[in-house]
Image (cartoon, rainbow, N blue to C red; front, side, top):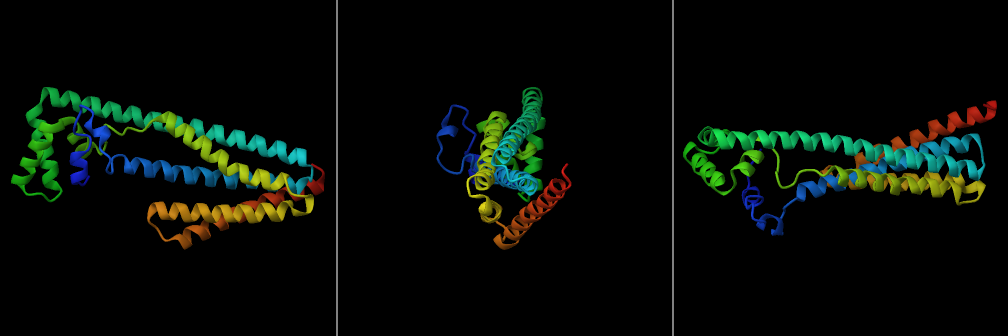
Length: 249
């Protein structure tokens, strides 16, 4: 993991100065949450749109569409939240276990850990003398943080919070799911499908653009993939709903 001046300055002060530094601290974490929010909203749009459009193919009852849409919204948002909580909790447990092991090694074999840190820095292209000097300075300032970042790729001051992940997924999925739900139940019968399809494609275009910008990728391919995937999902579910409705199932 590359070492920068920012990583050397941040997180190395256990007295609390780290939390007060205004520059770049937690930037990667915030970008990850933002990207997860965009993807969660995208999932909410696509899954709920597919559900309500499929039901619309079988029936024109507004109450049935609303019931199906709300059920899909709640099931999807709760499932996303639970999945994120379990996943991030597992990640956090693994990170804490690795940090505990590193803390124990620093306490029992500090010289060996210093040699290891210097070797890791040297492997990144730093000369042997400079790597030794940097390792000694980092160790003197905050040995655990230095080893966590260089050896484990973990920022001990920015561990993921499973509750934050769960709430972020719940809220983003719900926000995305509300769009197709409202689009299918609010307009008059003749306008339901056109309004839903157009609003969903516009939303997916925005999600594709947002995810591309956050990832530093070209926007056009992401937008095309996103919009095409949503259009195919709606077309397939509508066709299935129409067939089931025509057959009286």
